[in-house]
Length: 227
Image (cartoon, rainbow, N blue to C red; front, side, top):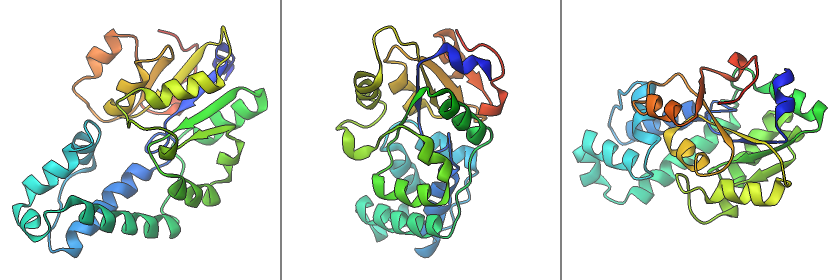
């Protein structure tokens, strides 16, 4: 894993990149709908296409799928609260596992004493539940969670904050994302953007023309990483 020494600061998204929480989010939305009498038959890829662009897209598309759900409960905050409670229950039951390659990469970064930062939309309460189950995350130097910034991705504020706080002059910076929304935020910084996904987002070719490197998983990064 010699390539990690080409960079002095590593920035990581969390959900869907390091842990399978995107799958758990999807399961929680399906259970929320089922509890109210609706069967969300989307594939995981279909869910990703709805959830990983604008914050409002998932709400709009679920309501479009089930107009009767909107009539039953027009306040999305209520439905989101139900989904969040289901999510916490699933996490506490141990529904989380690491994504491929995560443990080896984080151990290598810790051994090399390279600065690494998690930059996530998730609140600290959910992060703490996951960290109790996955001690590898105790090797992470720094965490920026939803409470630490104002504007959510795709606004670059969270990544700009991480770089301002933890990058030193002359550092080469690399960042990892798995969604278009997160990648858009990362691309607004000086970090080398890496997209880790198997979802066929239509924008991927245009991202790659702009210097984004694409890998199916962290396991597939074996050589020098530079655009």
